[in-house]
Length: 271
Image (cartoon, rainbow, N blue to C red):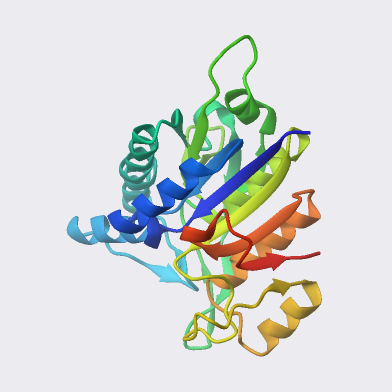
């Protein structure tokens, strides 16, 4: 079975021209089939602020009302996505920008209101608005772009964190979840390695010490790290998605620095 690399890059990397340039250079050098999934939350926050639209977050998750949905659609599906596609074309990579709505690749449903614990320790029911929880993904359609038949030229998909519900609605969807969804969907066609890359060298035992990378995490050590508060905040959904990917057939999951996506470092996620 052919191998493929699914690379998810965080917004802090793609929103800085220097780090984006380095990431693109590393990605371009990766041999074989590949997919790039990106975030862009900081750009969305910045544009919303300039437009006078309130940014609301609960537990690190964005509340996406109609005005904010317009912003994230413009930023994720437009500005950030096309900037990455153009950069890849400059490196000789035939890339195409996609959302989950394109080719009906990823379909989701609007998240129901749920009880959430707030930063002050209290709990309340939160309506996240136009946020999508994934229902299904079509790996064969995505693979038809990556490894086409009939002499067509292969392309490298660049996937923005937007999905649709099949009823004409775009939904804002967590980028780490998007990467996991793409990776899992491709397991029927490829041997998949999923790499989450960001501005740190891996999962750290000490958030202030970049030399404290935890080389591997399994389900037992993950529970211990959460209990001790070493893993918290946005790293929890990232690791949840990583373990879900492994359980659904993804061969390898790594969390590492954006400049090391071809190296053997970082944190390896084990079943």
